[in-house]
Length: 192
Length: 192
Image 1 (cartoon, each protein chain N blue to C red):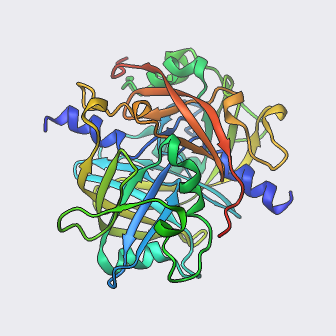
Image 2: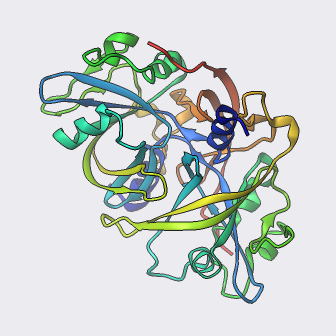
């Protein structure tokens, strides 16, 4: 199979993926914003999220910044910022921040050493915990702990779940398709 | 925060999750089917998918079967089988297969040592590659290679992407909310 078709096919077989922008900073105040479709839930107590980063054979600002500062942010992508979010995946020359290049705005929270995305409705402050290099292809699973969490109060349901369709959080399929979602059903804890 | 609310909250902050049923068998012909919302893309060449399995302090048939046979299947969940798929998460007594308990049907492919889900439209045959135990909470990342792949021809786009909304593949949020999706936009490879 031709390389690009294969890439698109394999990227779409796992099902829908989360759509997040990861914000980081270096020690000189330069800010970085990068789109990731691999953020996953790892556990609730302690509250842990993971994401996959590609081999570090080329310069990866997100990875370098996380290793240097130990902090990063995860910000949900919603319908109205899809195009700008996607544009962060372009390879900008060193020294150009994706915030400037895309017109998205950073937001700093008192004392928090990584930039949040102003336009996002669900924003998570993370602290680096550990990482695992996957031998089979050199990618890395980055494990972090949730330190801060902000979201609009009206999307919090009684049982604690955030109703993501209310903020227009999107899902990703493949490399570049963005999906809107509608809740079909909420089921109870299953018993035999 | 109360335990169940916290569980629901943390499970919903990562964004939308993939919805898959993992099929396995033991060496005596007993079949297992279990729902997972943590299947992720790890790489295209070789074609690798990962998923997260909880600590193995209690009996985990999926994990045991994969370790014994080295093979498993990943099957997309679509709108019409959401309730049966969710029901596989109930704790059935040992000896009862989730296929029988939920009314979902297994399908065997010539020579393939794990059961596929007949009702699924997108079915992936996997071979175990490696695993990583995440120190922070004892969960494991299971890494596997795609060996077989079947899907309806009409969902394959020219560029290789599968149009998942055509098969009604759902997305999961939190522990028990299922979402239908509609494609919003497909963007080009981003350049500065």
